[in-house]
Image 1 (tube, helix red, strand yellow):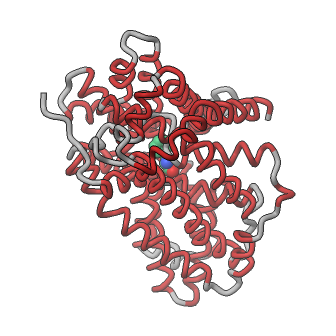
Image 2 (cartoon, helix red, strand yellow; image 1 turned 90 degrees about the vertical axis):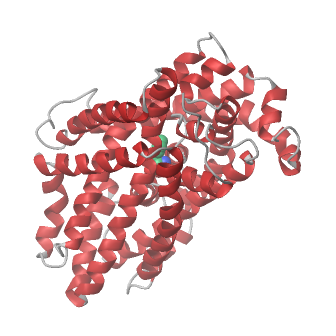
Image 3 (spheres, helix red, strand yellow; image 1 turned 60 degrees about the vertical axis):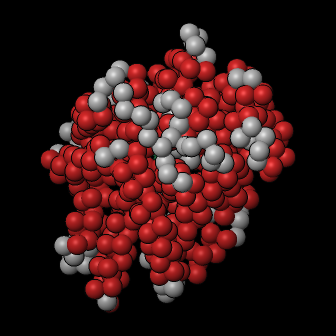
Length: 453
Ligand code: PHE
């Protein structure tokens, strides 16, 4: 067997984990969630949820991953041999592959929109037509499948190159660039005429919109955005060297993710307000509304509008790629470690499976729109199944595993590097309490709220 690969430095670990965390969840989902749940008030809820509830789950996953130095399934077998916990390992092998399948469909849309931006389609088309782009495109058959295929092949190519050359190499270069791009977009957006209303919306909290639904949505968003509950962070942590610091990596990742989401909000919302569109425009916000904004801008300065559009969709595409590779790696780690497969074979199997499920998701916006699973289209069904149920369930079980199945001395040793990291030692009791009590209770509350609503 080839020796297990490792990430080369703390910077590499944080970039890979932040790459997994920063994705469509930040640029596509977060802005419309903010729009639907009261602007700045939602951002505050989201920040609280990220740090109090979700960060302990992040620590739980990293502790399991690094202690066992195995993918999700192997980790359970190693830390709790012969127990039923292996089912958790198996669940968290499948969940990210399912997410990958529909995530790749949206990733494909960003490939398509990048083509459109490069071909100046947003600027050279009458406004009514630009507004019809999104609906017409996603409900067609061949085009969306073609770009879904391109996206999936890009993911497969990076994962095929391995943990160090592929995942580390790609995220270390692209993540810093992504930050620069999103900041540039935000600066541009807040300086548009009429943008100030959008800025006010993001900084003035309206607490009257804070209800149980908003709280549950903030927690769900924090889960999804930090890639938790499906073994991706666990798997990446299994590639962390022993001398790395779990606390610092976790905070680095969570802060990057939160900052990126907020800056993305400033890139999208002020532009939306400047164009006079309602902020809560739903999932279509980025793909439906922005092209229209690029079109209106293009009427004044066509080249600038084209450049901004290209930067925007490059940002979305790369952010989606750095997340999708983390989903694929979970399954690849399982097949190579547990089934003894070679990396290329494992990548091929997962790519074909996720691609095929993705094709069904893509068709569910068009020819298969009538196929309903519990009243949802295939795409919506899988998204809800994962975001509302599998992620929180996985997160709950991971925290219970660390808090109640592993021994306190083991968890302490892993979190503090055998007592050598002073800050980690000092904060350990708080983290232990959050992992054992606060996080599990919080997740159960989210479950119940989702069930009742
Ligand atoms: N965190 C990613 C995003 O924000 C999505 C993701 C979920 C990635 C689960 C991996 C696992 O887009």
